[in-house]
Length: 603
Image (cartoon, rainbow, N blue to C red; front, side, top):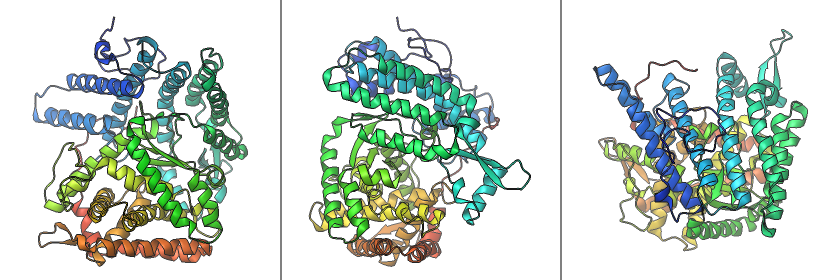
């Protein structure tokens, strides 16, 4: 019997597999015949509808204008933040931001429980014993991550965090404090200096729940008896990987952290199974499973073609960085993945694409795995389309509007140029592949850490545009398609101007500033008399040629290990913020801030 319980789902980590875990989890008759990813997609749609209905029922009555405003604001937060991870207009770490985060976690808790229940109770779901074990236990670990992520967010804000950010920007922090697995605290010796504490020590209480779920996961994989011959090797690979993951999370010796996590990356790169590891985010805790969606086979073939085009270009370059990077580029893979549930950082910053691992030595030996998220690409396109309509027509358009296909009607001066899958395949994938070769981490001894971070993302964006030019010159794209994708690239960057003051997205903002300034300089974009954006597509080739010159300027400086030249290039890119069109765009792309909720900032 599938029962309905009253109220919103509990947000805490629970291990129950039953169907009475909050709301109607799913409708079994409607799922008959669906298997694997199609089944999980259908469950997600059903739980999203159930969750939205439960939240709507819990809204305060519209007894006065204030209550009506609060209700409308909360409803908007559920639609954009909880269901689509769109936190636009929410001041970071504000009461409304925390409320949206908690709402999103509640929605994902319902989804995780539905997935666990479906795999334990529905016949014919299509997953074998090993896959069912991997998905189920990943969902349970993700539930335990919720408290860990909240504690992490609270630990890295406040006066000390601001002080550390300022010190890092000025180059006053010791290099050994840039450890991705420690919390920096003020030293207890009264010196005014800093020391670091491993996550396992600082978040011991929260991680105890996570480690317990890892123990259950390890036991679950170990005792599997139904695994067929073809899956035996995968079982052993995952068992070694999960054990090492637990060891990394439990490590309390700061001197061993980097090597422990490096070993984990090595173990993960061996795994080629369609169910991929829950990625830890670059900074924040995150544990969201990725499953290869094989329905995107055409897009996968196109991305492989793009990869071959990129390899052809880099084969013509001489020098050690090109030779070393080609091995990594050749060994890399890219795919469109489905995320059946989200947790941690993905609740408020969902990557459209990720290129992992970040370690130079692992990347050089094994390449990178590129995870493209169609849902995140769709959300990003919706936000960009809204901004494009605002900037190009002087008026906004709210709501989620589907994009036209690449071969559709030609009107690239407006939002019709924005299409999620085209963006993922032709723009995001080359960006992420660009991280596999000529990565600036190889020059960390000659360039400042802050500059390396800023320029690495800019270099990858330039790689995507350079690849677009290669695809056009080699006739893999028509001129019209190239112009449309270039328009898509620039309009997508409007969200960087909408988040103008964000430190989190600053590396991408640097690129957006440079690209828009150069686009205006060659005449590709301009402002009409009413301050609206106008595109002149006859200048597309000139802009791409200018972009390639800047890209190859960076590659040349890398080959020469010329840190001063790289720093100078970054300064030139940042100086573009004085361009008239760049000064105009933050205001043109600004969205009204969402009304604030009168609730406490944290629980």
